[in-house]
Image 1 (tube, rainbow, N blue to C red):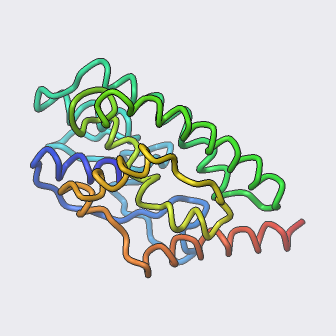
Image 2 (tube, rainbow, N blue to C red; image 1 turned 45 degrees about the horizontal axis):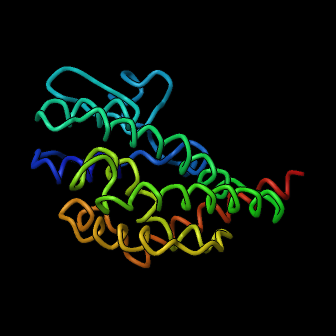
Length: 202
């Protein structure tokens, strides 16, 4: 999602091959041979550019934004901040298997969103005067918010974060990656099923 957002925003043509995350991958899913051969740690996303392969979203975003000459140090710093502060509690909510662990992850996410709001005060964007690599890093949170709520996130978005989300989702990249209600439901359903299996095993 991060990479597709960036590709659209930067006007780079691309094709998508869907490879679901390992923990929620259907048992009958056949991993493309090209992916298995070139992503030894099974990292997604992965891009092929000519004959070169690169895996993991932040390095891919760095490559894309630097290739078109729009990568700033400030925006890259904010992208890393997003990756280190928004995503760990978000992922902990996905994989939370009991109400207490989900609540703790939700509290951490709320704290990170309060910090995020402070970063938006000056320009309304992260790391500059418009959408950047930092917005690409953050977009999955905005897209998956309804699914996160279904999985137990009860926090409210601070006002500036809510405004930022609306602007990001209205961008061409945001429109390209925005999910339908069906996709939100399918996403949440994967993790509800994961929780059921984990709780049954325990």
